[in-house]
Length: 132
Length: 134
Image 1 (cartoon, rainbow over the protein chains, first blue to last red):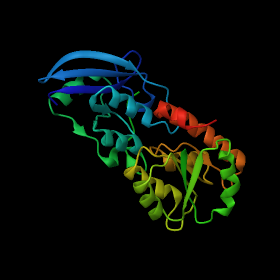
Image 2: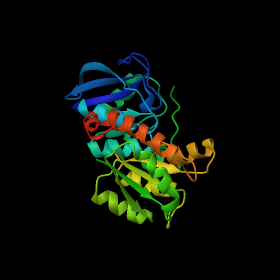
Image 3: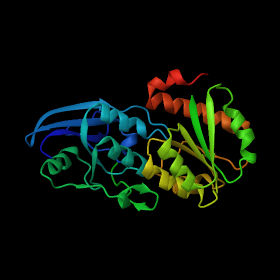
Image 4: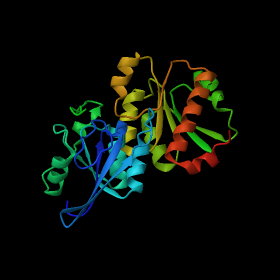
């Protein structure tokens, strides 16, 4: 990904040197990384809104409103995944590395894969986040 | 107007439940018996909530929700289920179902679901506050 805004569900205050949250909907913060011509130009954070049972579309709307182009998750349910697809946000998957920076760098370099339907949490999918 | 789609092969046991929504004067119910009908209706009309019975005329309610989420993830859903809390959680994980409704629900269950739906609609679309007449 050479241009656009990447979002990473994060623990605590987030930031490029922060750590990733396992379930995107329950994260404390979203770290936004703005990329231009394959270079990181700006890093900002946005506090997540409260997560209620069935409120999966709240963060979907939130990230769409903030012009996010790609999201990196360690775990996500089918409903929000379909929601992100409908609003045009690509969802990438890495359930192994807790740090934000290396997965962002991998996405920029084209080394992360989009999440597949059989990697989602629940519903027969095998994906369960190993992140905190 | 809040539009509710209820999928059940037998609507009579759910009529009392539906009265729990009567706090609002602005609720319209649509009924379906099969998941196939549900898919057709949600592709033709906008609903604020889909409630599925435990068993529909063709497949189970939860199986239907798995199909619905692929068609319209923005549709809020609830499910009538006799599963234990743990089994229900496992069966519906990732589907973002608002609430498990007991079998043979009463008006109080309808009222509880309506209040919860109201909160979710406000969170996902503040403009809907104006549409919900409480």
